[in-house]
Length: 239
Ligand code: UDP
Image (cartoon, protein in one colour):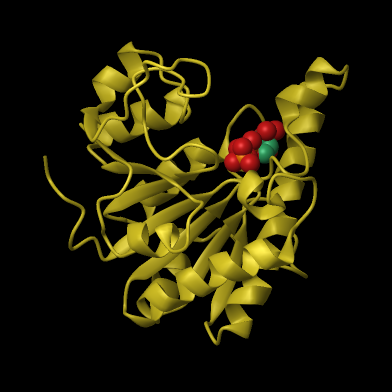
């Protein structure tokens, strides 16, 4: 299987769980640790764009099950991601890294609008670009947005960090003791097996466009830095 070595422009997906350290809201210590890892790799010349999740605040599907209108709940979810973006921006700038937040929902006081060509320019200048507010559309997930942004800005790979799991398994390792971790697989296999570790829409977008995806655990001393550097941790999924 191909290795991600040499991937110079990457999109990193950080879920809301990462920001909250498992709780609601933002855990500054966790965000600082993430920012340090991203800063280290960015200083080495890797172009890093981050797509930020928001599950530490709201998930549209959950609110909708509790009685809210789905679309309105999804907008709340998207707004939550922007708070995570600002936290990450702050800690990255404390590390001396220039950053730009681009939001898919316009809010000029805190973020630029999403302008892909401008995002590419920022990356070329060594800035870390942080994408917030998902796709700006209800019924989507930030996993899918990570794949879409990676395609649109011509990233070499999309890196899906996960909490509580360090790659793709043959079954849910939390419930099935026979579950085995996979080194690599194809998107077709991921789709066929109905794997839920990443959104199916994200899998099919990557499959159609032959964009490699690395699924890896965000926890651990320097897992994010290792994945960003092109180390083959976790599970590599290819077309
Ligand atoms: N969301 C959305 N459209 C998008 C991205 C996100 O409606 O393009 C909403 C959706 O309600 C989702 C919430 O924002 O539940 C938070 O995003 P996500 O669940 O992907 O965050 P994560 O699970 O990565 O923390």
